[in-house]
Image (cartoon, rainbow, N blue to C red):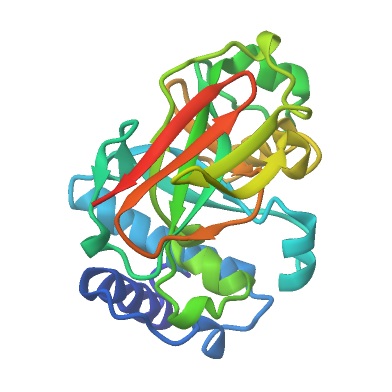
Amino acid sequence: MSGSPLIQTLAERLRHAEATRAPIAPVRGEIAPDDMASAYAVQQCNVDARVAAGERIVGRKIGLTSLAVQRQLGVDQPDFGALFAGMAYGDAQPMPLASLIQPKVEAEIALVIERDLTCEKHTFADILRATAYAVAAVEVVDSRIEQWNIRFVDTVADNASSAMFVLGSRPVPLADIDLTACEMTLSRNGEVLSRGNGAACLGNPLNAAVWLADRMAQLGTPLRAGDVVLTGALGAMVPVTGAGTFVTEIHGLGSVRATFA
């Protein structure tokens, strides 16, 4: 399927939109709204293109971890996208706004894996044993679809609307943090723009991690040692309207800054 003319055409269209910063019409006009396989085939086509161009996959992101957003898009599960080394920025390292179209930021808990996750069905214990540590993170999401007019197949095809991510520099073992009760604030210039906690991510970020580990193993591309997993938003997304710094604070994980130049 990934080699079909339609899949190739949609993948090229999304690549061109990203390169030119000119968003396109939703892809759901050309693939059925419930055609998950085709949407992931478009995503994989562009993942393969980036790898062929020399980029390195460093992990995965989980999207649609809010039950309210799932209901809004008419689905009953999250989605995932690939993370590349070129997407990664350091705490407070300037990120170029000029390369983005309509960015938003969201606060997340990231897991860094230290053991491969290759089972067909994983448990909390598997994830706990395989995770080296958690860090606070900011994901910069961006849509190559006009005005964020997306449904499930649109965001899946568009690599789960991913763009960039920033990891905090305080690694914390999972035994030392309450992943559900930890409170999060996302602020800019001292004004809190989003609040939440770990429970906002499918009840517990580990639920999202288990789902992803199962899905990737079933696809033959399991999570490996060293992979970064962005487990999903802990609160509402916030639009980026200009240069400046967003500060995420997560109780138990410290803070991380996403700076746009």
